[in-house]
Length: 603
Image (cartoon, rainbow, N blue to C red; front, side):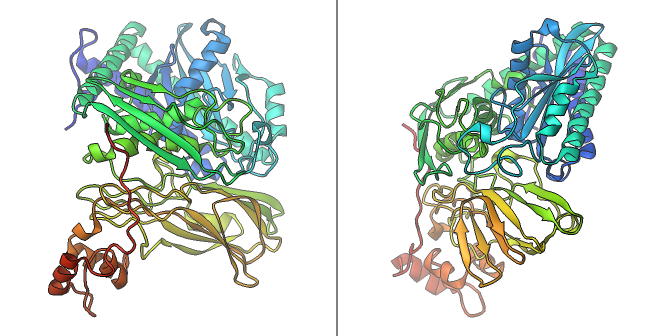
């Protein structure tokens, strides 16, 4: 079993058995917060999709424990707490305080509302609970708040600039009234707000129980030892990585306003016991809303960093001491107010994808080829004629992940920045909303992502609007023009996109970004996510695996021959002689569809 911070016993502080019990108890507190919030929230994007995260920090804002929520949120909790502490000062907090925030301080986009609350033991501040959850609507110019065409954060909803929603346990009615007045869905928002606060109270109670049982000094020493152990173990893992400097560059499709691609780049330096990521050279923040606040980018970067060091360990702040990140302020990966941030996941996901691309050829046992990357988030809404209420359904879409040596990529998983989020069950969607699902299927046969180990396939999902008054769709599907990348001769994926199929004449429109796009009754919004990138030359794929792909409808007979050099009989069996000859000669159609490119290279 791989060691982690909880099993490492090189410490002069608390004995390792006590440390194990204490830190696991704190981890359980974070996980109970997570379960409590999911059970009691009103927004389907929280209780079904699990678009939220919970954690516990010490009094200095260092993360002690976190539940398995959205990776793109988890890394922001430290920044949320740190900024709240900087604004108010530790000495001003009292039991029952709850601070609400959603702007650039620890921010992602405005829908992702964070709460921070102090934890006291015998009048001593010992830490904070923190959570971030996607609220369905926080005002702004359009239903659902985030859009693909905003040009200012002021168009995207109300900003909560670190204000106390509760003071000493008493609700600040002025703040509460402002929150409720600035949402199109007040009942849902009120429920999510209370669920988030209540879950943090549960977490704080569990943390206090640990302190009361073991004493403040013992718990704080156990946490400090755990940080040190986490740091030590991560540095040991870094020593196994190839020292050197590696680079990668790529492009975001566009910013939703113009068609101009946005250049991004990174330089990764691995030293004996540290990793440095420098994004100098990345384009400035954009007019449109693909910009990511600093905390959002660092959060995704931290998830990547843990993936190449200790992916199976419970995270604590010590893990990230060997990581140094430089992102110049005012760039698309470190945006400043009032730059719009509604589809911030496009920027923050790229912040993790760039070092992934740079290192994949050099860490084949730890990293795959590129995946579909974008959250591919959608809002489908309108006025539900059945119950005379507005409706909004918000969810991410899964897609294909990249192949890696010895293994094909995973089919239809959510992107790296979304972690444990889920697709809402079709049965729930069709019951709650005026939608029917004509399709929910793998995007096969694959037209891209081929390789010795092929990328996983994306998803095709058809929402049919059956509301008499129609509705609309808002969607942001990045990685449309610049698809997932292949490695070592593997092909690129085919890109994410949206198709609108009109019920009246059957015409099809293709898009990558939509805001409040009208859907008439019977129209279909078809969501298509990309296959992942392939790894290795397709002609090196085992013919038997190509045969299996054919029978599983991943490839056609023509693709088997043209791309993989495998000749199949009418019965779908491998013609070994013809295949050997075809591969030996290259064949007239060999590599006909091969648009591969390798990942970033080392220097």
